[in-house]
Length: 190
Picture 1: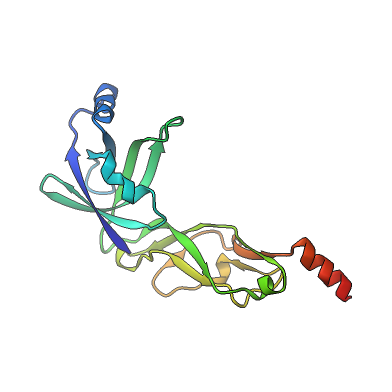
Picture 2 (picture 1 turned 120 degrees about the vertical axis):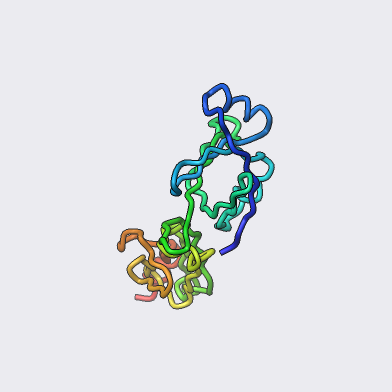
């Protein structure tokens, strides 16, 4: 898993007026949960661009004053009209405690069902994974080469050594759907 460095500044004023003043300066109010207590801080909005607008999942090293916190992004609030970031929550992680977070799914291979005229559909783009921070994957890569027409990959079909997928076992991740052309070819073949 990749690491992202972020410089934060401790906040002392936590009211609405102070928060709006921060946003006017181009800073985003943030909260770090999971440690001894909640840490309220702010970051420069431009520093977040590479963290937010990418499919990559990062472990974030947040430096606030002289302290360094290792965390993962938990929640982001966007403005409903302008899509600017209003607020971010981070969750502090520790080497000996497992953490649950969403990880993107990537499909590889040329499926047999697609070769037969079907259409590959990625149903779930992210899966919830539980693991120690050192074992968190950056993405889950699934090989669909042997996936035939009408077949699917479900969470119950997955098994990994270093982490556990915590989504419901019946969740379909990817499937090969029959297209009209494939159905017509199947009907003519009978």
